[in-house]
Image: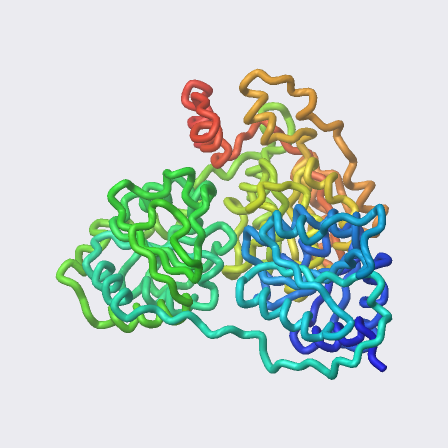
Length: 563
């Protein structure tokens, strides 16, 4: 006779190869069944939030469905921050969670279905009669709606017997959404007649990368990508890529994106960060968005085409190829191609030290960028420091930057997401940038990273503060005491969980790290970098200006970020 969890495990196995879990009463038998009966690789983590954060990072990088599993009650509520972010990022994921018994709640039980629903996450409950069917339905829903789905496993059912036969489906794939032919022709005509076309790609366009780069070359368009998709257009036949869009743009990039007359957006949500708080595009730009959502995601969109990115871009490419417009020769007339080629890195590279004697984070990032091997990818936490990895590090491919937590504006998910990123691309060096504030929040899963990663480096931007709050509220005169952190020795913590580590107060202190790289970069190395909080990131200046209404010119911040 087959048990409920055995049927769940065998139903999962054909469609999921990676699982991230923390064992408890509600999922112990399930994890045992997965280990005994399937080839699913199981990574155990130290805090429940990391189950979802790691599954999220893994799926964003590989585009493959992953499993997160936790127990009921506190185990489930501990996932909610990462679950909210995964929902906002529309990451498909199966979350198998212990749930209250079928006979009713105990005093420690909560309404987990209501909690998930409050985040916009659907729940499907397992029954003894059809556990496999429920599991398959949950996976199909996750893929079809691009959402996390909770599969609730009542904690009196795992060892119960089921008569349900083996449940099997050849694929979870859903039919692609075809673009309307008339809509394609309208957009193609607008692109053909554009004088200053710009193409903006987001994560939703990754599968259409080759076609979208060809389209940009055919049109002679400038190109730009959202921060998590930076590197999308590198290698174009025409050297017309501006790098990253939004708050991490250089001034050179922004000057050109604001000049575009027609902007084609594919697979990008146009959130406030990508749109640079409304400063990315000029007022006259006609914006066309292609996505699979029901409607446009931003008020600036003038024309919306609901379609799968691959099919829509292929159709557009066919509609514009060889059909030059009368103004084709005037596209981006007079543009300096050498200036465009270096647009993303056209920014101050920083010095070794800031005026306070601590490390300049820009100079640190520039130095590390030159030291790291070319094959690297990033799993970044959130915080003031987040800009340095996106502005001063180069990337080898368009899915090299994962920032779990940013949609929900959370910090503390860098370490929790890192095991998933490590499992997604084990052949590449994983770089985990984090701040001291977010790093302390997620510190339990530094241990998970050390166990999961073949090769990883953690860069702790340690400025003894929650520096975003120092900039945003300290500058308004609020008491800074709650914004400061007693300087923590992350190096000692790292050594305690098996990582190599050094405190970095000068570039000379990087010598042991260089030796580690030369020796093959095996394991995890943590760099506890004592940086200055006086260097303000350009994107933070935009927040101070646009969100908080501070006079950044009078404060000298605009001039400072150019220095």
